[in-house]
Length: 122
Image (cartoon, rainbow, N blue to C red; front, top):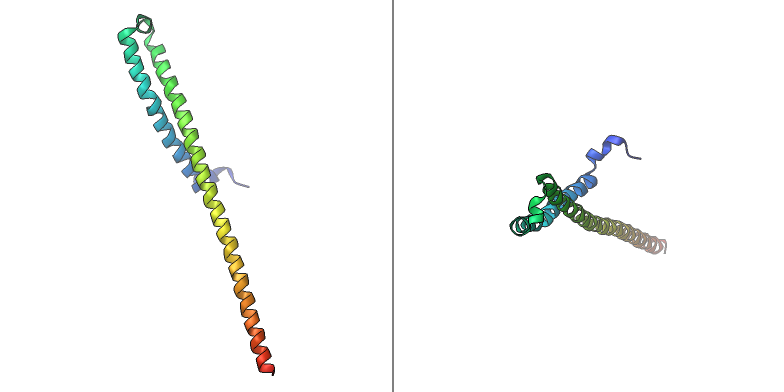
């Protein structure tokens, strides 16, 4: 079981957090830019949008950026999780294969030793 402070030393958790942060930044920009353009269009065209308070306009902009950040961070985190899962599976499979090769080599060595001892016994 992990101690509470061990997460700061966990490379997998730190890498996942880094990937999620990058995704959040990209998602906020990806959703924020179109919303900013839409906001500028609303200012130019719509008297209803112009009548809104600055705080509400900012809330609308930040809501879209937050949504984009969450969506993209989740997508990136799930992709990273898949990469890590495949890497760990490959490492486990390689370890099993190495053990199998070691067993085969030991069996071959034992067979050769039995053959030698049988030849010497003759």
